[in-house]
Length: 166
Image 1 (cartoon, rainbow, N blue to C red):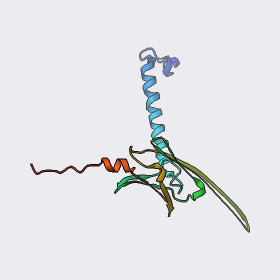
Image 2: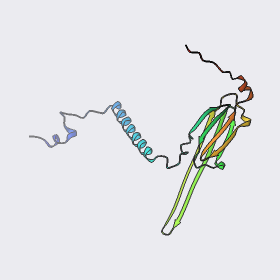
Image 3: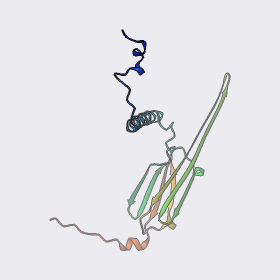
Image 4: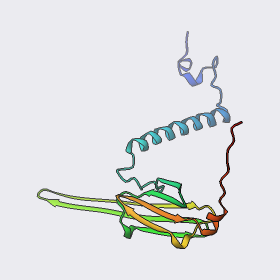
């Protein structure tokens, strides 16, 4: 005849519960942490940047040698001249920008208030031999274009190398 204590799982003597090792607990913890991180990453990816391209603090840029000058183009959509701080410090071109967008709308039956904030920072290394005193910058259609000519000394040091067919 079976005793009632034999029906309770944690009192069975034929199959006692084994303690869980620390390694098994750590593996389970890391697995759970990894799964939660993946879930959060997917969620953040779906949200996107809420139509604020400069929100990631990393403005897209191109640096090109154009003739006797270096031209740098930086995308700053929605920013005005007052939002941008441009400087050259040593051999670095430093671009800072800050944009605040606020919108309020009040109509019969509702009130809407939206705010967004973003800032960018780029420090672009400049090649040697540039005449930074003659640097020029223009902002047009959300693209900042900076042109820095080569110094006369750097232009005189350039030599053309001929390539022979082997």
